[in-house]
Length: 129
Ligand code: SF4
Ligand code: SF4
Image (cartoon, rainbow, N blue to C red; front, side):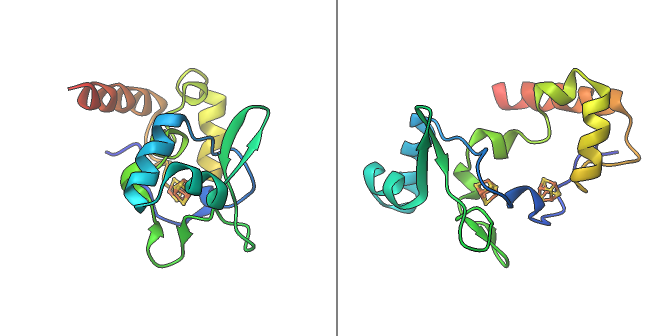
């Protein structure tokens, strides 16, 4: 049983802030979009407390969220997006995992917390190969 299977509802792409992009991710996304990094930052990001974040559009969704095609930068999306929901805060605290289940329909309510943790580890091992 899969502990997580994204339903592509887009709920986690809604709202201002939170999606920080690191320099290597800025490089990868800029390359993916075929634009220079300065242009990417200027057009799609804002800076706060020394960090760079992806902006939201007027509809409140991340500027890269598209209702039909979903994440327009899916292959190179930043780590907060690609790692969700396998965050340390959820893997180390069952209560956080319970709360996250209410917010994200992709987290399988039938799955156990142990399965969630186990599958996260398996995923990490797979990506380290
Ligand atoms: S980068 Fe993609 S997955 Fe992340 S918030 Fe934006 S649209 Fe959603
Ligand atoms: S809220 Fe969960 S199910 Fe919906 S798009 Fe985000 S990760 Fe996928």
